[in-house]
Image (cartoon, rainbow, N blue to C red):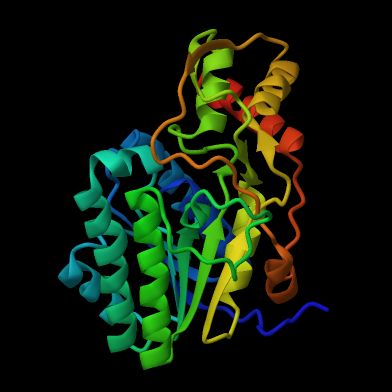
Length: 326
């Protein structure tokens, strides 16, 4: 039985990370639904800022979308935006992303992912925003052996600063839910991919390499597994979570179908009819061996059902890259 606890009323939503991959797709879904979206992004250079501006260009055609180039780490900037509108919800997707870069820049990850999240929670408290959706990550599960990963599993052994900051964000959400009665929904994303995807992630990197006949770094023996989740499925889960009236929940958003790196490469070779050039390297510090989402809670609370198989999603990514990036 699915629990339905929301009504589809027109709302005003603050969306952080609005120019990014997941953020821009989420913004598009919300404005098409009729919500007013105030988007925030600092357009940093973690990857090409022009691509983020291109995402915003598509959104600028909607009258119910407004954008501020602002930094979630700047409390006074955020306060000016939040105090001037009555927000029904904050969807907080902005973050410093990536496991490996977090090992090189842990202080930056702490500042943005922990400090920035705390700024937004505190402003939600001060300005009476009663719904808060936080983008967490499957990386909080670390290298646990039990599969699939369930929201009730212990997550006290993160193996990267990125994972630790995401777990810290979840704990802050719980604190603010408990003390200040803000509905906080933490979504653990499992390897999101698709058209417009982040260029530092395997689906994009491997697609680029095979289509440009470049070699790719393959870390480990290829037995590592990821629960690749197509962007449209993730967005459906985010939008549903923004309507959920619960004091505090942690919910996995995955595909529930892990794919090994070796099988991923074979599938990409099949789709492109090309052979991948591979440079073999050892597993990297901070990388987990597998991710595998138990999505039964998302199915129950959000009516969440991933619709896109990995082969379908990867084919769409290859087609998009061929048209937009080659």
